[in-house]
Image (tube, rainbow, N blue to C red):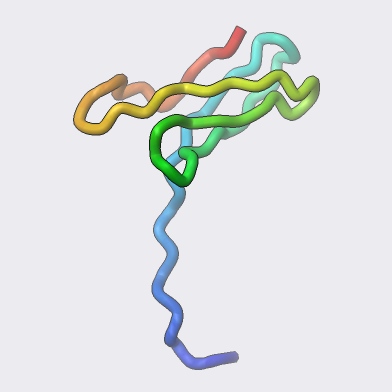
Length: 66
């Protein structure tokens, strides 16, 4: 093992998504600019972006994508 110079990682902000197109669940993650959550359906690759709002927005962490 190496010395402890690394900073502990913080969890990356994410949303849980139900993809109605294929009936599957996955997570999408906040982009580096922290402006939106982005991801693709794990089966058909259908894309989605959900805008992130600082100091507001929805408290929901679970979304359905049609």
